[in-house]
Length: 455
Image: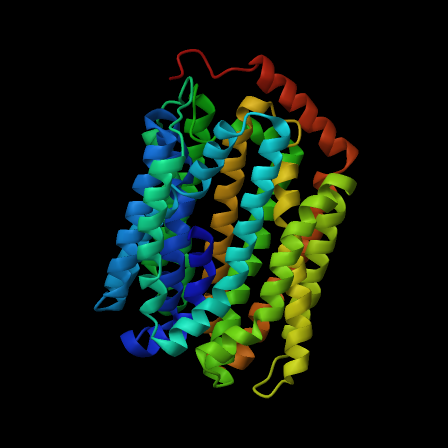
């Protein structure tokens, strides 16, 4: 459910735009209200699950997600739709990280846990890949509201199955909640995204936009200072002393920014410029979706046999080449040309997930792997939100029309692919791995604790 909702809504954007008279920025908020809220709340949801019970929090998340979906399906205006997407995301933030914790608790043997995580990852990749196709079928056959209806019966079924089959589990020593750190994360991500989305409409030098960016910078400084002094911070700044971890976090931002930007741009191009129906547009993205799904599975095996560097370099290179092919799109570009670009991009997007996780956890003590993984997931969700915000801002800020404006947006997507290659090379070298080992040893022994008197 959570993965599917990341991609299925994109296919419905032109229909939502016509039905609710939405601007480009309104469409951006329809996507980013979901990804941004999830990014802000992932760490908090994981802490709540450890403290109050993972099965309980998962069921609450499923209920909130289902309720938000139902309300989205009856939203009378764009503002209400955006608000209900936020509620949907509150529930969504409790699904993936809590599900991973449940898997870790339920499968105690190493082989069984690896198999379960692999199956979970395959389903996650399949859900991302199938979103455009399923969305096209629903939007063309029933209407855009149906993409939200489908979540309700699935959510209710999942709640019942969770109650029947999932054992309750808690952390032996749950981490303390960190309200100041949580507020700083919300201020940082919320103001940054709002400034990027609203900048073209309000003017980049206008007082509200300058204020939003100023608050985001201030929130970043406050976050670093606060989290460096807390004994149990929301985001442990010591993790970033590991070059592989820092590199994986940045790779997650750039890689998921390309996915958010690709889905946003491609949907508007196929339906608004080419005039295709939602179903036709969804079917055309099958090559991308298929490559993403297949390579998500292959990537894990490639990382296991060859390490993360090869997957990261291939991923970034394929993303960049696929985006470069799309830079010169016109209103009548040949379909075969689009399919080639989609295949290349989908292969790159599919290869990136497994090496990000592997690189982020390199050298981490086992008992801190869950927290480190949640932080890396937060960066990935942030990247998806920023990708939509930036590419949408390029389109909204241009008076040359969508086709010409999209050329610059595809250049940005290609540049993000190049950054994946460069960061992948840097974060997987010998020097980088040595920093991970040293930092992991410090974390395991508890050296360099928070300053005296820190909470």
